[in-house]
Amino acid sequence: MNTIKRIVCLALLLALLCGDGLALEKCKLQKETDETFTVQIQRKKPAPDSWFKKTWIMGDSVSESLANYEVIPNLKVFHKTGQSPRGALRNHHYVVDGKYLTMAERMVLRKPQKLLLMLGSNGIDHEKLSSVKQEYHELVDYLIENLPGCEIYLLAVTPVAPVATKRYPKLSMANIQSFNEEMMEIAKTHGLHYVDIFTPLLSEDGKRIQIGFNTGDGIHLTQKGAQAVADAIRMQVGEEKK
Image (cartoon, rainbow, N blue to C red; front, side, top):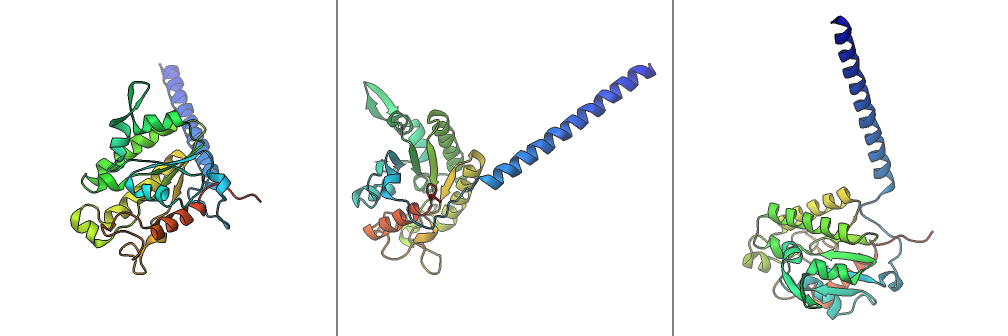
């Protein structure tokens, strides 16, 4: 009986030691990953037009301004007014070969080499923030799974003016900042890059979007605002040649 007890104790001890070893190895791997991967890229020079070949933005009407003003040559913009992360994953608005597809499914068929995801403001404006975060997480999971090898960048939600928050109380600067922080965490979790197009558009006091960067509704971008977004994107994507 004593022999059996000794064997059991020895087995438990070995299990604990192995578990600790695996934990240490996992921590070591995580540390190496953190050291070699940068969530936010900061370039010294803007990315050239050639970088944006076979690059798409998938977004709502805020991203539409990038197409309307053609601020980044070669960049293709796939947008839909009122599109939310949930809608992009669940609403079947597109028909291809007689089959109804969601925005996410349609994008997968385009087979982009690089994808900039610019969604979130629609959703924050009327849903619980926790729900929008979960829906965005699910959308990112789907895109990663169905676009292997594609470079995916998560673009921050842009700031708004008080007139927008007055119309949509949930679309506040505080909620936008909270959502953007969650987006950065999603990027870290999946080894993706986060592009901050929120900070470059802020007013000096940091309380609203800079005057002149958005239209009268406080949400959509003017040509000047679209150019500021384009400039911010160029400085935060890809890798510079050494």
